[in-house]
Length: 146
Image 1 (cartoon, one colour):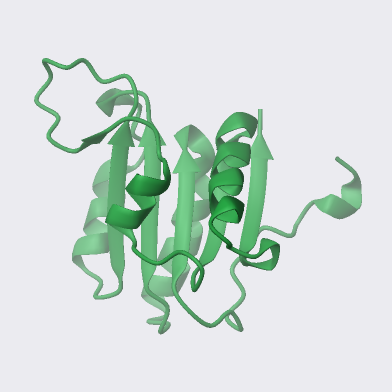
Image 2 (tube, one colour):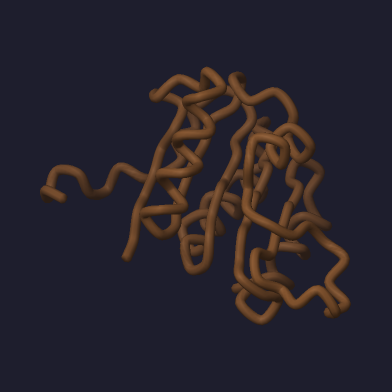
């Protein structure tokens, strides 16, 4: 990275349309802030938070995110676990995020704005899926860590 590449991962109120926040692990941190900003300012954007973790114990700020969803009329959370034991009480989604996950969770892809944050492999995989389904590069904002 070059210094000029930093500081470009933020939500701009001039963005018109629904927002999809795609995170894995601690990549939730900036996405959480974006979700709070949109919900608390009651902006017209609908927020779809899609958050992947290995196990239930790895989900950072789960209660806070669910409370934000519960107290808003424009946010929904979608959690998925990739390594949760089959015999656990988890009743949510399992497995990696793929096109079918997107289709089921958020519907039509091209008309939304995407904020991706997490490990490099996760961010690149999400970007590949989006681009393969005709989401323009200008609608994809990303932050990679690790």
